[in-house]
Length: 293
Image: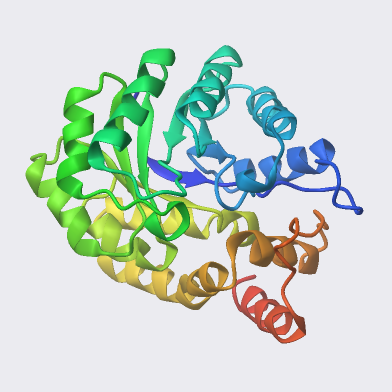
């Protein structure tokens, strides 16, 4: 499957008592992303608080997302489980409901060896025919995979087809491009590196930013692809402070607070996560005002 462009991450709305997923609100969030002309919807990532959902809630969100998108763009389902058994269950479910791809992270408590990580990915690949995006996000998942190792998995595991790199090290993206002779698609998962990553040959940008700033990320992507370097730089620096802020403040908390500021209350993040404090909300308000034209 050829995937490129803006891969957008919806937050997972909760009821006001924080005990239930609000599917009606989730539909509204997805519609905001589709209106922003994104190229794919990636449910159940970090911004979607997948780690804080029960298995039944996870399936609810996955099922609803595929049905609501209804084939308008591809749907990627995030899978980040401590055990291979549970990751296989999630991958099989993603296939059964008609998702287009899974984004697989080697989430871990213990430090995993490369053999263990390889076995994890291979087991998931054998359980589902869906393409796998290898997701390297050591800050969240506790496992750091080198470009060489991820390319080995792409080469040796039948459904591993692309890479999402989120360490914030641009040299890793250069290495993926160079070592694969530009043949393995890779995606930027570090918001404030979007311009560098796209210029380094990234096939796309995985981001929750369109939840709040609409078409701005897509405009940046298009400018880079069209070779409009001055326009791309201008668009990037308009967004830069905001992109850095939502990462450092926590994606779920910052995006949910931002949506509330814009009049679209999708509930608070699930504890132990907390909403933005007063000063952070004020800063968010100011940044969104500057980006509203």
